[in-house]
Length: 120
Image (cartoon, rainbow, N blue to C red; front, top):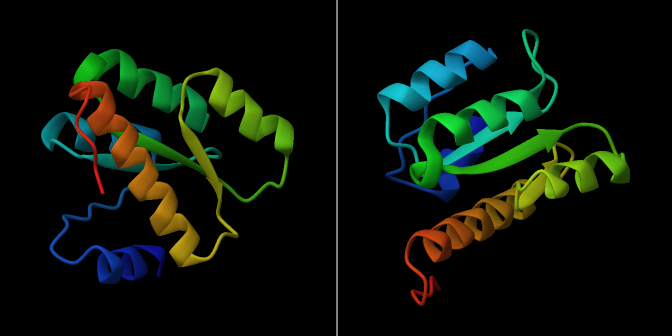
């Protein structure tokens, strides 16, 4: 359902859904994603560890990563930020709020790759 809602907000975008950390890592190796939505609580590995692995494998070309969690823990969100993930969103956010979070993550990625370029 989340994927369908995001596809409606970002028409023409490529959406690839996986259910495991290993699936996410493999997909990121096969496709040049602009953004990865990653659940913090994956079945096979911690989502933060997966995000760290994505960043280590792709360095400066790492896609923007939006970490999702159903937990309301402020500490968890701060932990994500301390580890260098510019945004973290709760899965309870509205689809419009999540879309804005994705847009902000993409804008930060563009700014990190091309300083001085503004995304509107």
